[in-house]
Image (cartoon, rainbow, N blue to C red; front, side):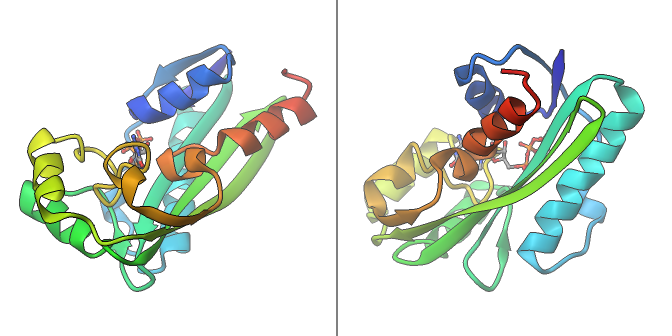
Length: 184
Ligand SMILES: Nc1nc2c(ncn2[C@@H]2O[C@H](COP(=O)(O)OP(=O)(O)OP(=O)(O)O)[C@@H](O)[C@H]2O)c(=O)[nH]1
């Protein structure tokens, strides 16, 4: 049985869509102790840290992931407050951003690691629409307070890459790994 080592409901939803049987367990790796400023280094080390913690606890097949947003200069992680969410979203309004997801998969005794990214070019976010989104609290628990399948969708001017990567788990590439290992 595959263990999705994540507390993310979005990752669980994505994995469910593939029909792959899994159980979801969270693992307590503290990302706050990482002090990488490069978004790729951060996301790869955060997901790897989660993976190592999970390997200690579970003997099964394992999937871990980490996702960050970057505006090219900063790492935009999960907002700590409504004000923080507004700041993160205004940094993305009318801009090109990258959403980077690093994933580790232990399967049939082998370990696969990937780092995928989706590039979005957004139109300017409408102010009152943004306030409504902030009031909805849907931004909570999401990297960069971003919801590409929700609030941000109508503002997408250009996109390059998978939506699943931007949502936290690159399902298309995960399916390729599982096919390679004859699990599906
Ligand atoms: N629904 C949605 N979720 C997103 C989007 N972008 C990022 N996320 C979520 O934002 C979260 C990023 O934080 P992480 O630290 O990678 O993961 P987490 O939610 O803390 O869960 P763990 O795997 O237990 O660490 C993940 O749950 C992603 O699924 C998006 O556009 N839509």
